Every structure is written in structure tokens, then in C-alpha cells.
Image (tube, rainbow, N blue to C red; front, side):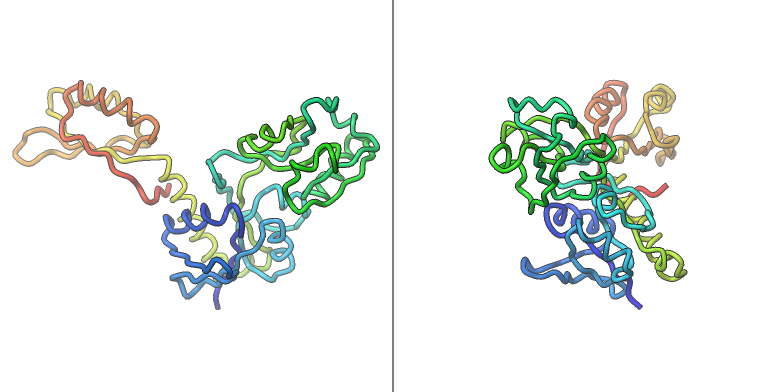
Amino acid sequence: MSLRLGLPKGSLQDATFSLFAKAGWNIRVDSRSYQPVVDDASLSITLIRPQELPRYLEDGIIDAGLTGKDWIEDCGADVHEICELAYSKATRNPIRVVLAAGQNDGVESVKDLEGKRIATEYVQLTERYLASHGVNAKVEFSWGACEVKVPALADAIVVNTETGSSLRAHNLRIVDTLLTSTTRFVCNHASWADDVKRGQIENMAMLLTGALRAGELVGLKLNVSESILLRVVDQLPALRKPTVSPLYGDSGFALEIIVEDKTSRDLIPRLKRAGAEGIVEYSLSKVVH
């Protein structure tokens, strides 16, 4: 029996396929198809808008899937969260769901929207937010492109933003943040209670998180003489203690370490100046703790 997996169609699709490829699953899809082909007979994958995915999970139509915490909160869906997968369409930063208004519209807080009109894809989330602040405003569903609706069609919008560039381009500013969201790997409770499906889901979660972690790290190999070994080892910011192996012919040691990718550009010159030789940096596919 195959695991029915829902993956996000739209802006996250390419980033999701790339993550799965790093984790070991190659997924192909025609631009007009919602049914991708994957090199794993135990999986049946359907592309679903992330806004809708929590409902299909809750109803048991799919077993597991990837969607944003924002859409789970908006739907109020009762699903089991397996793990957080901190990636998005442009960066690894979380997105924010924000209330935004025009630069010169005089909206300083949500209180200023009493009796006003708000356009959003997050209707339920926005309504709960307004209720928590005791504000009565008209919330209208928008099929995206909310930024163009202020001020002609709406007084404010509630949208998700990763960098804020689209808001700035439309002369909008953030008034408040409703929540911060990342992608979550989730499943329905029945699938989690099924031993076979749970095993598949847990294996997938392990490999996906390992692939994400690997993207932040690189491996380094280097050779050192015995006289500088301790001095070099003291400088190494490794996940664990470095692997140290004697070189053939008693001519020194080979060291191998895993470091943060962003630190290697400063570390490699320091290691070279300390006397290390044969320094090799290599990329990683998965790092599983």
C-alpha cells in the first residue's frame, strides 16, 4: 500500500522538489499535471495548493504532506506535526503573515481598521486576529495579489511575506505581524497510528531534515604534520571532534571535519597559514544526527 503524499503546488514547488532530490527522491511533473512521477513505488504524490492541504489531511484523503504553519493555523486543522522543515521559495528564512496598509493611510494599529475593509487569503486567521483585538472590520477573500488592492479596493491587507520586497514595491508598510511560519511536515492521525505508514513517514522526515541540515554544512579534509596537530585541532569548529588518521609512512595526520558552510571561507585561510596542506572542501547530501 502506497503512502499518499501531498506536496505544495505553486511558489514552493521547485524548492520542495529540490529538497526531495537531495533527500533521495527524484520527482518529475508535467507543467499542467497535478500527479508527479517519483522513483519510489511506495509513494503516490499529488500536488495540492498548500492552503488546501491541511483539510485533505484532516479528512484522510492524503496521509501526509508539506504545508505552511500559516495555512494549518488558518484552517484550524487537527493534524499531527512530524517536524519543521525551515525552507521557503527564496531563502531559508521563515515567512511572516502581516497586516499591511499604505504608507500614508494613517493606519498605525489594527484599532484604526474599525469598520474598514481587509483583503486576504487568510480569512479565518484574520477574523480571529480582529476578534482578539475587539475590532469589527469586513474581511474579504482575495485570490492573491492583495498588494494591488490598497487603497482602491481595500483599506488594508493580510499577506505572507518573506523579504518584504513586494510590499515596499507597492508602497505598503507592515502594521503588525500575526504569526511567523515555516514549512511543516504533517500527517493525519490515522496514518500516524498505522505502524507501516508511520515507519515510512519517520524515515522520510529523517532524510528530509538531514538534507536540509547538509545544505548548511560542508566537509573539510586536510593534512597536518605532527608538530602542528594540536594547534590546528584547537581551531576547528566541528560538529563533533574531528576524525584524525595517521598518514602512510608516519608522515603526519589526515583530519576530516564538518563545519558550517558560512565559516569555511574564513577557516580555510587560517588553516593554511597554520601549516595545513592538501585542504579539500566538499559538499554534503545528508547529515543525520
